[in-house]
Amino acid sequence: MPGFVDQIEPILETALSELRAARDLAVLDQARTTYLGVHGRFTALMKQLGSLPKEERPDAGKRINTAKGMLEATLAARRQELELAAALPSEPTDFTLPGRRRPLGRLHPLTQVTEDIVRSFRKLGFAVADGPEVEDEHHCFDALNTPADHPARDTQDTFYISATGAAGVEGEDGTRPAPKWLLRTHTSSVQIRVMAKQPPPVRIIVPGRVYRRDNADATHNPTFHQVEGLYVDRGVAVSDLKGTVEFVFRELMGPETRIRFRPHYFSYTEPSFEIDFSSPLTRKMGKEWLEIAGCGMVHPQVFENVGYDPEIWTGWAFGFGIERIAMIRYGIDDIRLFYENDLRFLRQF
Ligand code: DAH
Image (cartoon, rainbow, N blue to C red):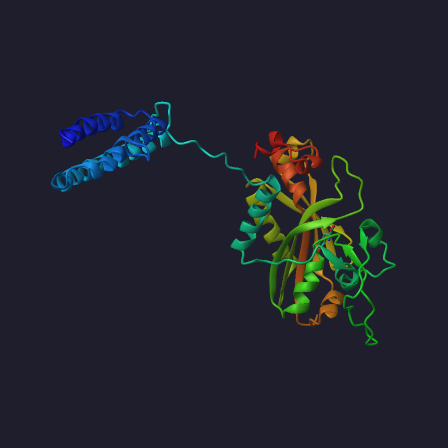
């Protein structure tokens, strides 16, 4: 068959320029089928080899194979180029533009205030302690010298929970009545849990959530937060309490803050006080003094209840509401704003 090998070169040239010019993967694939497919032009050439005179076959076969090799290499290179182009953005891109910032959240104002309180007490060597929100009457009331018939229980009515199978607290007669479970009304229960577990001295604060059966209004919510403090050592005095509270409140509410103690009653402290404070912030709210916390010297009976010797150990305790601090600090007039998760409110802090 004269001129057989002369056919190869022109087909190769056209094929190569078609492959190189293919503007997308579909066109490229089309070109591949045209030349290299089962019914493609090179396949057809291969089939004709058999009809060549014997002596011409090796040379012709070699040429076809070389041409096919070139086609395949060109095909692969062009495919890579097109795939890369397809992966790039179709619009022109300015890679020098700054990245898109992910909007970051922020801490809830109550968390911020809690962290500030903890930070101040840490400077004085207080450790953070924790306790369960589902508590029993023993830790929440009885061990805090507040027996079932005590009028103070009425002011801290809460949500009771029915639970069975839990271990009770051993009474004097050695029996273990099943505990009555409730949502803790104050963080004072953690005083008992910590003292029952470790020997004195104790220096802790306890931030946490508490519950009361209050109707929600501008100053009440059935769930709110407190910080409890407890300091037990030898020879602890009211002046230590006052100095500590003053230090922390000045850090929290500004250096002009003054505090005063008013006599009060709590069943787990004796003597007991309410703490008032005054600062430019209270004046902004139209008052010189605002009540902010309860405190006192730990009652000897409480020490007895946890197995501390009241002849050796003395201590003080306090408790205050975190919402109240945050409201005064930021001038917030409705406690419910803290729980509504309205971003317009939360973004201000
Ligand atoms: N538990 C009290 C309350 O919830 C606050 C309190 C008062 C805590 C006196 C104390 C304390 O530790 O000594 O209102």
